[in-house]
Structures are given as C-alpha cells and as structure tokens.
Amino acid sequence: MPRSSSESGGTPQRRPVRGVLLDFHGTLAQVEDPVAWVSAGAAECGVTLERPRATVLADRLVTAGRAGGPVPHRVPPHLAEVWAERDLYPHAHRAAYTGLAATVQTGVDGLPDALYERCLTPDGWLPYADAAAVLRELRAASVPVAVVSNIGFDIRPFFAAWGLADLVDAFVLSYEVGRCKPDPGIFLRACGALGVDPELTLMVGDTPADAGAVRAGCAALVLPAADAGRSNGLAAVLDLATAGPA
Image (cartoon, rainbow, N blue to C red):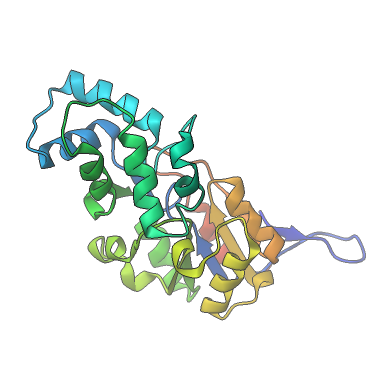
C-alpha cells in the first residue's frame, strides 16, 4: 500500500490516488493457452495437429520466445537488433517473434507468421477475470485510467472487442511514444494524458519495469501474473484508488 510519512514522523498517511496507470500483459490480460495457440496457428496453415504433437511444439515455441510469453533464454545473434527494438517499432516486433519461432522445426509451412498474427487478435488473449469489474469500478469512482504497455502493436481493438474501450481514458504504448518502461518518460506521458500529477497517480503492473514508475514520482503496485482467464488480485487497486486518505 503506497504511504508517505509525515515530516514530524507521526502516523503514516495514505497517499491519495487520482489516476491509475495499468500495464496490459500480465496485469489486465494474458495470452491464450500455448497449446490452443499452436493449434489455432496450424489450423490457419491448413494443418490439424493432434494434441500430443501440439503440446510438444508449444513447449518448444514458448521456450524459443513467444509474444506475451516468457523472455527467451537465448536470442540468436541474427535477431539481436530487432529483439532490442521490438517494443519500439512494429516491424522489429514482428521480425523478432517470427524469427524466434522460425528457429523451431515444426513441419508446418507458414506457422511462424500464423502464430504472430494470432497474437494481434483479441482471440489470442484473455482478460483476467476481475479486469472488467475493476475498470468499471474505477470509472464509477471517476478515477481516470491509462493503459501503459511495452508493445509493438495496437491493443485498442482488443478492448473494443471485449467491451472495455470506453473504460480506458488513454493508451500509452511504447511503439507510439518511443519510450519503454522503466523509462520515466513513458509514465510521465501517461500522467499527462490523464491530466493527473504523478504524485497522485498509481502504476499497477507485474514486473520490475512497471515499478520504474516510482522514478517518475508515481506510486507503484506490483501484482503476480496469473494464468489466462483467472484472477490476479487486480481488485486490490480499488482499495487504494477509490478510498479517501486514511
């Protein structure tokens, strides 16, 4: 819980929150199950995979590097440049992840591109179970919200498909603003979009990069990521953002 101590060293006072910044992946939504992802991608290529084969390929492809998945253990030298720039330029994002998928021998022609295209659609993602309710509660409490994401493509259509677009006041995406978390600049841009001072803003995410908002003057809440479709404790935001000073 973000708190600040009084100058006299008395009882700590709760820091007021007048705006909320929310990370996307791992905070509001999660990528679909890996086996479903690979099966759907293969189907787009005209191939039906039996579940055992899809499971093996999913494990290898996630290990190689999946958009929205864990960071790959190794990035091949020929992909190092696009990997470093993946969240700044859409072409680099695509080249990085299709290139990583291409390092896996799948036996399915066109699969790297099909898998990447899947991550560009709402069907490739699932909002967390409490995401919609939290966004609605924040709107009801007149607390403005910005989604702040390190990402190489537009996620606004996802929120429109999920019926949540009207609950987000601004999208601050790294590839559009030329800054990536934990750079303070991206958080300051988001605060400016909401018209709220950083000292009155709470950043909520699931990684140390999200906690970088502290360097911009914001408070930060880091939650554990959860499996797709489950609750990740996002409702804790409401206790901080919709209550008056303690």
